[in-house]
Length: 366
Image 1 (tube, one colour):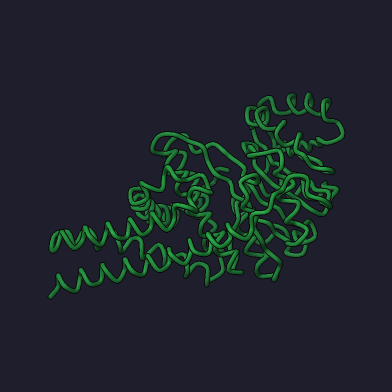
Image 2: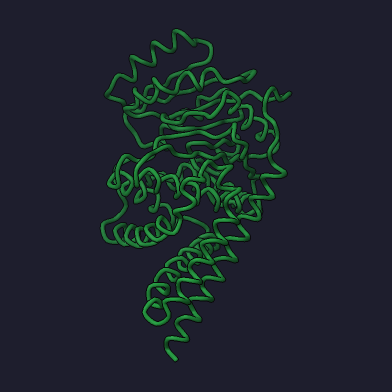
């Protein structure tokens, strides 16, 4: 009787997970059909300010300044906030300012957290429409600003996709987790319940930033300049949209090793308690279903190995064939086939990360 109950519960959890996933990918497939507009030479693009906060990022700036400054856009400025860098950033930026005197503006600040650096850049921005990336953000095309600027004419906040590049297990894990996170927040925004965005590719109106109080409600946190800003915008009933055309993607390098990845995830998890209660419940329910799926799968193997493997395989195949079109668009086809491995690692890691933050407090390094 106990074995039957256990395997029945496993089947029900698998069906519940599939229901969540089918809805998410159905939403995204519909969005891919209706939200992809060619972005080359769009008329009436508003002036924008691109803001980048950089700390000891001379190497990344050297790699990416040209891709920002040479965007095909009628009117824009690039503001780099040099946030207390001790490397060659200041010298490098002076050189680039001579070459792009009309476009590049540089603010030199004593080292502060990222939010203070961004707030300083926003205060100095000449334009109402703001676009953000990180120092290591490399646009997929010269039409990135057109893609984001076109959406800013309709929306107060525009969420973009920021895929990662990386090799090995950590690189593949980072790519999978980034895509999965994006599939969640993009499907949410297309269902009018936006809850987060990613600062590596994000845009919003300057007036909205001040309307929601900027970062003051969470300025003590070293992260949250992106997702908590979107939370505040949603609470203020701002118009939140997304840009998912491939020309609007902004690439960054994945974490180089698991230690670096772990530290980054600890920082991200420290903002979760500030999310809307409904969003926490929704995300928590999905995470709980994923954890239960693997626990029950391992338990059912001892009682009915064939049934457990059949249910596992069916969920894998249905997930794969439902997600493959979306994964291909988001440049994640290679990691889709290994999703059970990454999903299992992720649900275990998420529990450990939450426990570590609860016991040792939030991380202190930017």
